[in-house]
Length: 105
Image (cartoon, rainbow, N blue to C red):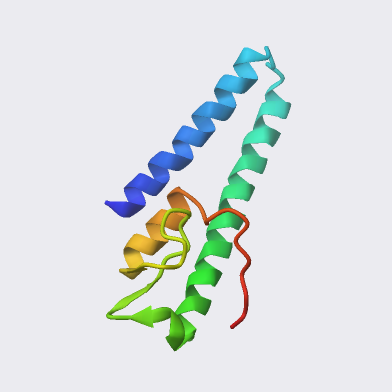
């Protein structure tokens, strides 16, 4: 179910981009394809970075407690220990907390 929500969020983002292009009467197919390709790369880069972050988190015992890991989602602010799947989905769908500084502690 979580991964379905992730793909749903990605398609919502694509839908927003397409609506913006339509609103500004941008109908150049090559430009649209380039913008969509860029959007896909940004999403993929974010997902890869989030995965690297989670792998690092798992390698540091200080970030693990009671079967959960610290959650850097903006509402959890590293204060909650949650299930790995929950943390992954929150970071992929919603984002890290603002001005988050990834320290190698």
